[in-house]
Image 1 (cartoon, rainbow, N blue to C red):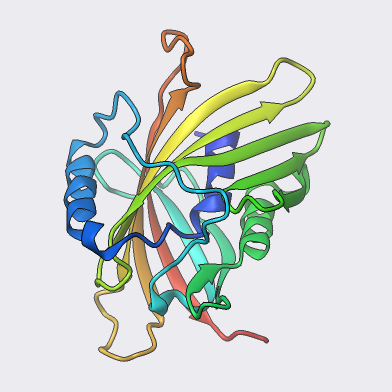
Image 2 (cartoon, rainbow, N blue to C red):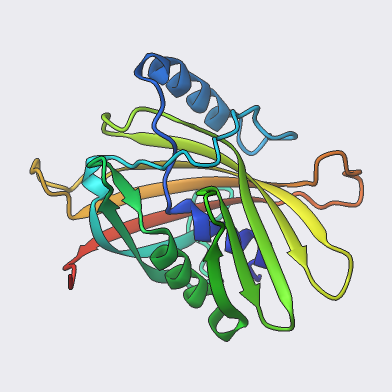
Length: 241
């Protein structure tokens, strides 16, 4: 088995973080996301997620702050690790912004995972000016992958189990006509069960559920939907800075 290119590039924005919602919406958001998770893999259509604002920053729980080594494993439908695919390993970094909120270091994370997945195929990653939810990845053979978050929902950043759901639109530009697709990824993160009750979390355990869809308004008969599931482990590294 091989990992589809578009689904792989999706991971370049997954470690950026979801929006910080109004506190009054947290309970409802949690119920909606848990209901969505129970339906997987029966996701015939994307979830009706609210569209994030272009300049709205992205926030993670406080225990994400720091430098991490990430290991991602493909899971089979029964939840067991797919032994035919090697783990993907890369670094990820989360820092405090000017509002003392933990946010993903977007350029660092995108480069790290892009190099791990694509090697020399990835030439550069650019953050769109004044649009925190849009990235451009320049690939070999004159290809350009445009990725835009078009929907996002999350639970509170102040609870132990942190859940978010994102929908992205991807456009692959190249020699042929642009190829469009949508990818929904529901993620759950929490301090690993073996973590001691301390202020500084050293390991984070995560899981992701993913489904691909055709472009909005496109015929779906010729589009092969792909459901994927991943196990993630983040291990804290010493920040050289």
